[in-house]
Image (cartoon, rainbow, N blue to C red; front, side):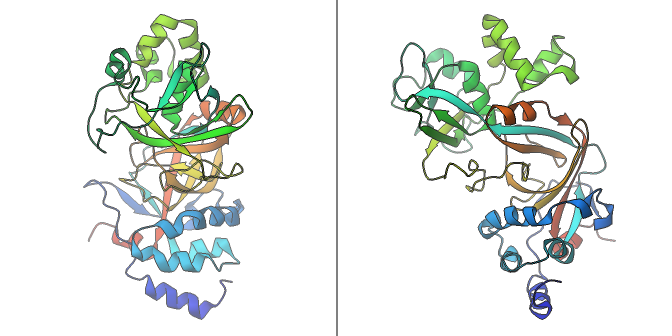
Length: 347
């Protein structure tokens, strides 16, 4: 039972106004479900999900979440907490979801360039404002627009690793003395993301089911000239910032500026899913996954109501698993009751 049922009911009344309704595009299909509609719900580790939910709940800006966050701190029955105060909401209709995976890479690098470490990770230039459309990847690279300006954080030994780190958004760089430097997302050039995997499919190099991060890396390295040109197909360019205050045993910082958790954090499109909300995942394919996660991150390639990127952890093993994920299924957002009901069409 939820501890202190009377107090819990009082808090339920306090949140009756509910957090604000997500500001979704007009006409987005919405369906409120029951918990018994969620495949595998009863078998999940709800305590693990609640721990991750607590990590970012205090940072939710909508005041309607405050009482729920306070109540979450006292729970001894996590499953009951979610079932009493939330309702599952299917946003975007019944078209299959697209699930991919991401991870925190660990690269080799140096604080000063040399013959091996020649490819820098850059800070955001001061003249670039958030949301502004700036030069493309090709213009930045070919015109040397960032070179020699003191914007370099660290140098890496492989330009392909730099490219994929920009897609992942964060990573660790192992330095020569054995220490590690952590970098996180610091901004972007405002250009739309284009998938080089989809471009290889369009060219007929691979079938859609054959494409993974590992396959793309191998192709680029086998074809250095064509590979470099392929990378330019994506005009988006990501900048980084050094992160020095995250303990080594914690995950990288997500979009909510808190550490994310392997296999419990998902990146979503915040136009449809509120950051910080619990999200139920039903992923098909190899290694099917039915699990309660928390929307704690975003990504330039994560667009749409039924689009999610699952965080698999840090290092090469996590990267191999994440790179193989491109599966269908369903994503259901858990929203406070009044918010969920307010999303239903009138009449």
